[in-house]
Image: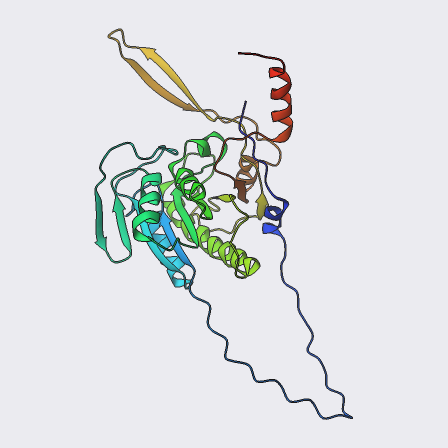
Length: 312
């Protein structure tokens, strides 16, 4: 049974307008205005504290672009990311009794492990005693849609944060076609421009509360638009993870106990309302996610009916 996500309705407001104005009151010309009460000066809001990770490695172009843009937006950003490329590691973590960690420059930590390892180290040690306001994972090189998201280290880093009770956003740049390196790297600029808008929207709506509903994260996929990747997306869509698995393996017996593995990219027709459909149409796909593998209520009820009456 494929994983389904049951999410609060509040998540679906992410792509709607949020501004409302208030007209100033006008004093009567027949009466003197009452003196305004004395109020203490407002305390500037503290910068949003972000743990930034990825699966391409701490020095990859995507995470460096993310660090640059998020810092320029006024956020307090600290990179805690894998030392080496960890693409495709999914939610794997804590697979060794020791872990090597480097601190090559201020605000940067490089963990010799998976994105999940990096996030757990960051939450436990770098942010010890005070969790960050948000974990951002990415931006990843290439899409994390459909079955690609299930096995993505970028998404895995966000899941590790959600499991620890910290809001998280996974960011990816790319479409369903074979990526052009130059255009994809160029598109990381628009990806991060949108990410800043999204985080600002979440912070404005959250006021002083959590940025997202409890246990909910966002998997954001930004398309590559235009021949050089610098184009503007056609829109934003709240989506679900398309159920297809576009990577299909083929195994050939070598005759010596080993098998050659060849992986073909075979996308299927996009599910209506899914992330593949949105990205293929040049839109930014935002798929709410949670960190567990629970089914939706309908699937749970159907499965419970199949198991009714079974005994040890």
